[in-house]
Length: 421
Image (cartoon, rainbow, N blue to C red):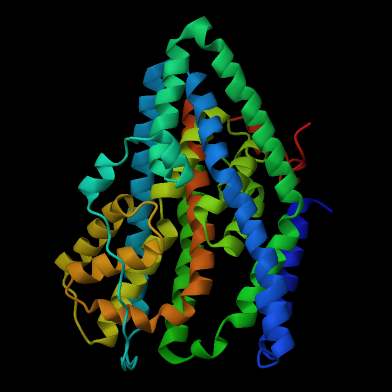
């Protein structure tokens, strides 16, 4: 059985097991030893293993990719294409979310009640831009500051490339290190089905399904539908029209990463799996994905943008507040640009949503209404986020001639996720 199918089966079994355990959460053994013991510890082990790989994988793969560029101008083209497409897909996600929320009006008739939410402070965009340049690269790695690591890796890769033969020894070191790190990825992925099972089972065992009624149920279902629509229609169309590639092959190749993202709820933690899928299943060269994927995991948040758009209108409708067209455009502009300003901040979706609500004069504490069901939505939107990163990566790689179309179109390779020989 290939790894993709095994992960899918274990995810489904985890959902069933978790749902059954939820009925017995009053039992001390089930609650303390199974849900918060065995499943909690096993799931955290898997997430920690993925996070362990995040910094070394981004550093070595990006250094290898950049120092392999013989034309420095190519890095500039990659940057412009990648950032442009990321901003485009995020704007499309917001327009789609606002349109669907305006049509189906999930917040109409929703009782407001006593809700409260205190958001963490979002750092100013100027501070984020200033802090992109690390004063201490080692500290940036220890703190997993992805923007700083990306900048340092690009500068280091360019320096190695400019050094010519004198920098060959350092280049060889990073190429060997990259091979070793990918070997660790192979080891960790052997345990992916079991890790996903534990994460999904614990989530379904603790998730309050009773909250999925009335207005919240309508909001929940609408967010899920729009997330799926954006992934299938937007990404599928861009891959077909801009990349001239088969969208079906794309989703087949990215399936293991999407399931892992669903289980971990973290684009950064899923990054090793995303890189592996993009390289081995889609045929994208590391020169491209080593730059586009870490950047996307940090600043590209289409799924989060969809949640922000629908949640904003949901809250506005619950409070019977009419938003003008100017306020709608403010939501699109604010949420699209704010993703960069909140990069690397925990609970980034709720922080961005708080900023959007403030811009259109809606009460920030109303976020408390949707906190109870945000976990499952967070899992789904993370899967969409990493799919967007991979879609942009594939399109940019095709435009640069950095994709092996024989691999992309090979039905045998798709979803096999074989170990590197």
